[in-house]
Length: 374
Ligand SMILES: NC(=O)C1=CN([C@@H]2O[C@H](COP(=O)(O)OP(=O)(O)OC[C@H]3O[C@@H](n4cnc5c(N)ncnc54)[C@H](OP(=O)(O)O)[C@@H]3O)[C@@H](O)[C@H]2O)C=CC1
Ligand SMILES: Nc1c(N[C@@H]2O[C@H](COP(=O)(O)O)[C@@H](O)[C@H]2O)[nH]c(=O)[nH]c1=O
Ligand SMILES: [Zn+2]
Image (cartoon, rainbow, N blue to C red):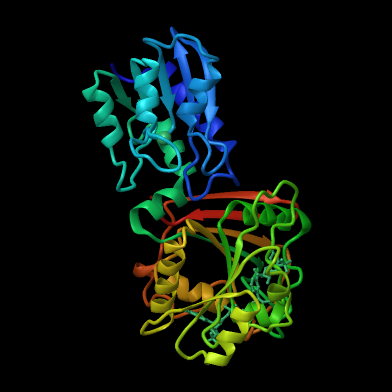
């Protein structure tokens, strides 16, 4: 049976329900589910917490023990068929006697990739999948970009957030940058910190700003890991990052240039030090991302500075930009721009977003540019 307008609406609802798990489910995906019979909703559920019940199981439980034989379940992501921290959802669906499963998006991880759908079909369940270009299909995939990229590549989804002047500077020529964007923009950015697994800066920013990089908004179930790209392990032991290591973890990505005494001192202060190798800066960016991906960092917000953001750009490792532009002009040849690094040579080589949106936030303009889609 093809997907009709009622299915589309129910799948839209599953995506809405899935959002309720944001900030709570990483490294798992956001997933929502609705059980219906003859168009009547019997129960709704979502994946509320990593390690907790999956959306399908939560939706079935929400039906309160009603006989679900012959009922339908709509899910924003294909049901799992593996035993992880919880049993397979395919088994829960079969045990409940559901007759039709409608899914909005695929699960690209190795243990899924359509296997659950095959099992359900083999058991006589009718399985319908939304067209990839449908509204529900797109919304479900966009909602899980970090999970999807990490599942496909093993490395985290990278969002670069910047606060620049109208003339594209991240700081004055003297290194002052507090504050360029306004209060509402900074509040929004704190909310994003709460959504990602890690917040990343270069040692230049750590030294210039002595930042905290914590999410300072209400309802933060888990602070992001603060990561500093710092080849020589120069991160000051008396700075705010190291001082707050009990509040939120700190990881230093160093190179072989770091002395043993510097890495030992950081480790003794509770900092995780990862030593990566690579031919050049963008090679070390990639190596660092691989290490973070292995530690189940599925998403990160890169908060600068110019030099490190340029190395990420040169490595082709920026998936999305969220850029606040404030109504001020700074000027100065030495004042850093949004992307340092080498950059491209020809306009024909320019990176072009697949989608771009613009929105005023207080006195600033927020541009969100998605460079890739996973
Ligand atoms: N307005 C805004 O949004 C922001 C503004 N800022 C401002 O930017 C300025 C700091 O920026 P910037 O000087 O560019 O410093 P960065 O924070 O970009 O740090 C750059 C340093 O990171 C180290 N590093 C380690 N590994 C890598 C790698 N793989 N690739 C590239 N760099 C690596 C290098 O030092 P080493 O070789 O020693 O490891 C490099 O010099 C400050 O004035 C700060 O206030 C910063 C963030 C945001
Ligand atoms: N200057 C600037 C930003 N700078 C970023 O925020 C960091 C400081 O974080 P914290 O110490 O946690 O408050 C700083 O090191 C840099 O990464 N962010 C913005 O939203 N707007 C701004 O104008
Ligand atoms: Zn499941």
